Image (cartoon, rainbow, N blue to C red; front, side, top):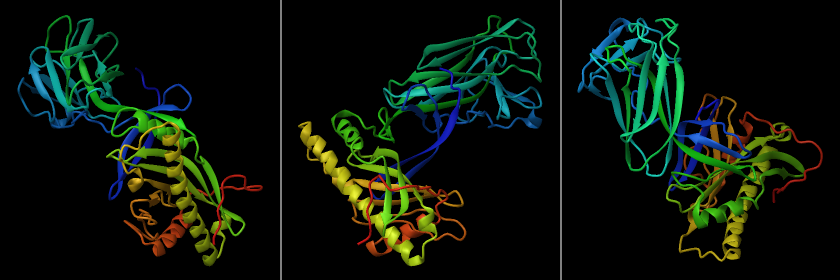
Length: 408
């Protein structure tokens, strides 16, 4: 599988005692409406072969059994770690591997996996070893002992400064909690000049789909919206607002747009997230008006909390699905997110776990900081500051046609 474009994403899930934010994720854009593939954190240790650093950026040879290349096991005839002073490196990397030391060698690593999950393997490869005069070099890739790819490279027309690196990708399926990945030189003529390897990555693949504007995880782990209850949750998402304009005292003060829906890690609850943007009317309002507007947004979130859970219960009843004794309401939450004027993530959440509290998390110069559970009295003040410091401003024109609420 060839990946043609990448975009950064952030994945958030509701934890029993707070928020868990998982950074460092990337998404591969796939074809098809309302679907995407998100690949999780890189599982490979030292995939860029930066440890050990070779002296003077040249090269160093390591025999089978040597432990110098962190995270990797060296086999057969050993390998060379090669620096940028000896040959051109793959993009974004400073060192790579010659897969033949004294003779064709292997490089292996065991990685933690989950049975049935799919993983995206990526690496850079070339056969243009400048010290080798033969016409071709070859590389084998093995996954759990099985050959999954065999590459042959022409050495013609390449030099130390023009290696002809090519990025390769494969989708692999794990069968157990640990999987073995092996790269081996398989050149037709055995020599101390092997195929070259660089920039190895391995990421778990997770399928997302669009439901009423919400990005929803529907396959793999940690907790997809799948199975009987997951299907009920998907039906519920189709029934709640994907976008809403909140009003206070007759003026639009904030716009909420569907973002994500994720089960809790234990699979016993759901957090539904909207992206928020204040309007210019909110930003230009007096402190008293902004306080009233924040209270209106808080009331709307509380309404969403109740209505979304009620819609879920109605789907269970309509589909004749027994609740099964699971108290989903105890960790059912709705959340709004926004980027601050300085680019920090800000969140505010209302949850049945501790009604009607919320939490915002942001920290930067000149911006108030809140963290953890808030009392009902302090929640509105925190939400007011979050709205005020939000980078995005919603443009609202004409009469409001989406769901609204107002202060009491």
